[in-house]
Length: 292
Image (tube, rainbow, N blue to C red; front, side, top):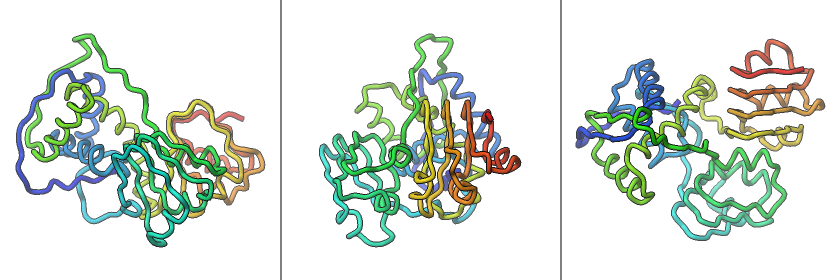
């Protein structure tokens, strides 16, 4: 779960008009549960969406020093970018990259799956092409997919909210983004809530993995996972969220499943290998329907 430290700085009170009522109630319920103010929670959501999208794992009060994997080098706001294997590895053994807002992002054929896993943290808001043979699961985990959000138009489904003690710097960035996308601040904040709230359900997993890198595969209709998909993850783990039909090949070894599949959350139908112990299955699959 993302931890937001309320830094000293100029603050202001703001009003957002036309916020999705149902989403705001979810947001408010969660921030009360973790004991932070509306202003802190709002600033945390702005911070993750605008400045550190790789930390999109929910929000909570800052409670000390804690790392969530490697802080990536950010490559943002380009029309076209072609990336080779040498581009990724020449920056250093432990360097990872975040690609964001690239209109046309292409990974050359020489970029193999192990190089991607090692050096690419996440890809967001980019039209991405892999010229090499990259397993579908890896592509889905690296490219952060967001739930399609449709803003309500009925007045009863919307509300105006006033938020106190919001970071002026973050709010100015928020206003600029709303203007650039041609939407109201109420709609943009609603979209931010819709994007981040699902990740609050995986915070317990993130609290236990320390600095381990993970892939999050989210909002897919159907995924079939085979042994090779999990083997190429290396030291990275994977979390599945909101998959309609998730199945694992019968030949997946128990050891590799336990090492790599950290959690399965809110998936409608899940078919696990028979060699996965019953209690492990119940532990790893949360709010998900396991079928035989």
